[in-house]
Image 1 (spheres, one colour):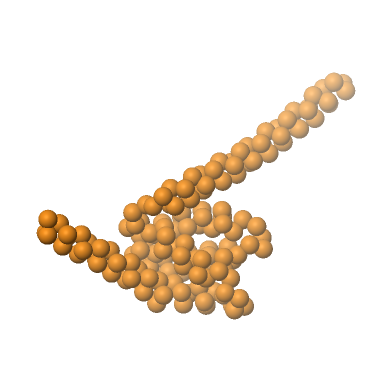
Image 2 (image 1 turned 90 degrees about the horizontal axis):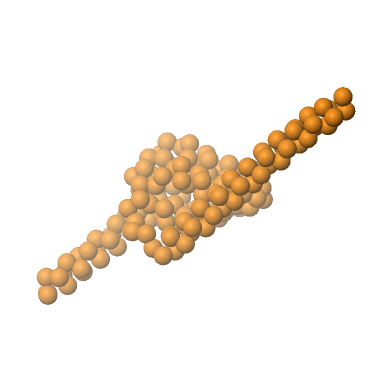
Length: 150
């Protein structure tokens, strides 16, 4: 039993140290890049700035080291910063990146967020589909109107 307790303690310490290492890596690299991208000094990050982050070689290397899927980060960007005037704070971006690392065990919050993300993606696809269907109906109605006018 003592060995089991020791293993749990060592495991907990290792996980805590790994988390601290990830945070330190983010602060030393990505934080500086985000501050550099925030040219107006508001502490807010726009969708365009997040795209620049994804294009930065140092940032992509750090994100890769943290097992962050840059494509998924860009998908989240589209979901979280969908309104033109909606931005995220630098702290929110850092938290977001840390929360989508591939080496983390999923939490209940992750599962709920994933359901919301999926729902938002389905809604967006449905709106696009509806728009395409409505434009096809309009084209068909115009064609029918020309035929009946003859």
